[in-house]
Length: 201
Image 1 (tube, rainbow, N blue to C red):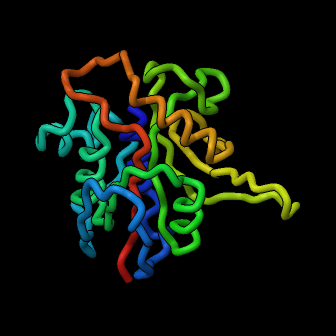
Image 2: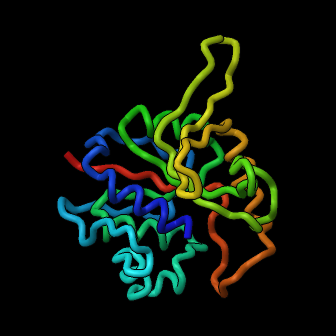
């Protein structure tokens, strides 16, 4: 699943994630879940998805049956427990400024959106192609009059970085509130949510 794929990418890159203690201003956002990480994680990367310790742990905790995460809060709990990272799950309508603030201060972000099956870019499909992406950075135009900001993300379906306007990712995520397609009895709780990840010094 894309959720586990993102976590496996994270688990492989734990040593490359910068340590940070800088605070993120969230006074205009809704805090859904937060937890402090530990200095040691309880699992490690394995390439065989059938024997993936992340999937085994997620099943044991009752967070998923098949590796799909319809509630980003479940993904946050798994990241915190198995990878030892600080996590903060927010619902926000100011992705452009929040993502830039997080990246500038050494954090990473996970978000959900509907992806195009061919280009993997954000589209509107009412949750039919709901997908997770891990945002590693952003880019701005050299022209100061251009206010567009592109998110640079990876997502497990392709080895190549995914680059798209943050506003497009947000719009695609926002329409997940109207998701009509579910393969689970769990409610789809993904829209407008950012999972912020950090590592203690």
